[in-house]
Length: 224
Length: 225
Image (cartoon, chains in turn purple, yellow):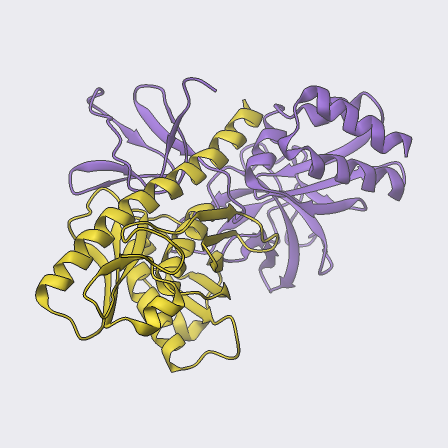
C-alpha cells in the first residue's frame, strides 16, 4: 500500500514542519528529538501526530467504551476486569436512575458495557454505565445473556468504527446485538446459542479478510 | 579458513523469525539463526505483585528457560543480563505500577544463544507494543585457537574457541553497546576485531528484524484501510 509510513521504536519523527505539535500514542519527545516508541503506521494531520498499532493488551484511555466483567463488589462500587493492567472501579451510583436507595445489583461474572471516565497511569481506571451529563444510559449497562469473546485491539477499533466488512456481511444474513469494547472484548447476542457462536466465530475469523472474503466466510458458516 | 559448515568468517547463519505465534501472550516472537532457535513471549503491562510494585516505573521480570532441564546458574546469569539490558530499553515510566514479564524459552541451542535471546526479546516486545527507547540487535563472535575471528559461532566452534564475545546495540546509535559479554582469554586487538565484526553484524540483524516488523504492520494496515 502506497503512502503508508511504518515506524519502529527509536525512529526519529520529522515533525518540525508545524510550530505546535501534539504527540499522540506511540510517540515521545526525548532529548530534543521526537521518536517512535512502538511499531505501527504513522499518522498526522499537520498538528497532531500519532502511531496506530495493533496490540492485545489494553491501556485505558478516557472516553473509550469498554466491555468488562465484574470481579468483586465493594461498599461503594464494583471492581471490573477490563483487560488493562489494573481492574477498573465502577461506582454503584454510576448507572441510569441509580440513587442511594435504588442501586443495581450485579452478580460476580456479570458482563457490563461502560465508558472510561478516569484513566491515568498513577490511578486505577474508573468507568461508568451512563452519561453523567444527561443521566441517560445511552446503551451502556449490564449485558444480559449473549456471549463475550476477546480479539485484538486493532480489530475492535475497526469494528467500532464500522470499517469492518464482516458486520455488514453478518447483518445482511441474520439479526444480532453487539457491544464492542475498544479493550478487545466483544459481546454478541443472537437468536439462540448456535447463531451467537456463529456471529462470534465470523468476527474472530475476519481479522485479515477483505469484504468479498468476509461475505464468503459468513456464507460458508451459515451453510454448514 | 574453512568452518565446519563452510561459512565465511563474517557470514552468519540463515535468519528466520515468526511474530505473534503464541495466542495467549500479549506479544511473542521466535528468532532462529541456523539451528539455534529461541521463543520469547511477553506479557505487559499487567498487574504486578505488591512486593515488586514500583511507584514510578514498570517492573521488568525475565524468565529464561534452557532447551534441556531446569535453569542452572549460567541461565540465571543470562536472565539477569537480559533484565538489566531491557530495563534500560523499555520506557517503564509510561506504565508505573505494572509488570512487564518476558518469558524466554530456548527451543534449540547451537551456539550464540544469548544473542538470539536478545533478538527474540526485542521482537516480542515490539510485537506486544511495549514502549521502547530503541530496537536492540545482538551478535556473537568467537576467537578460534588459530586466532581467526568468526561471527555467529555454532556450539562446536564456541566450545573450542579461545574466547567468545557477544554485543548488542541499539539501532541508530550503534557506537555504544547496550550489552557486552566476553568470556575466555583474549588480547585487546582481538577484542576490537570482535567488537567491529559484531557491530557490523548487529546492523544486518537489525535490518532483518525491521523488515519482519514492517511486513506485519503493513499487512495489518492493508486490511484496516
